[in-house]
Image (cartoon, rainbow, N blue to C red):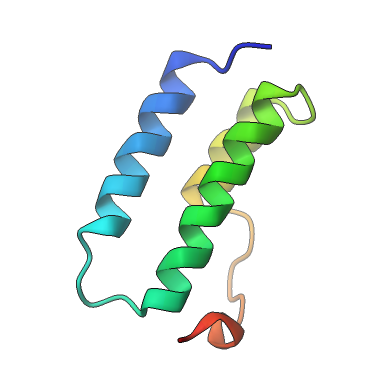
Length: 72
């Protein structure tokens, strides 16, 4: 299945915003980038819907998640 253009563009914008954020912890940044990549892969394979992919890319699912385990 082909990933929709708007999902790819949104993922690209999110990746750029994370990559250029100098204040973010590198471990957390790496985890968020990994989640974006996984969302695109799951959408490409048809495991999730477009709405779910947008939520995963934007990080709208886990509010209040403890990210200390990813800190480098």
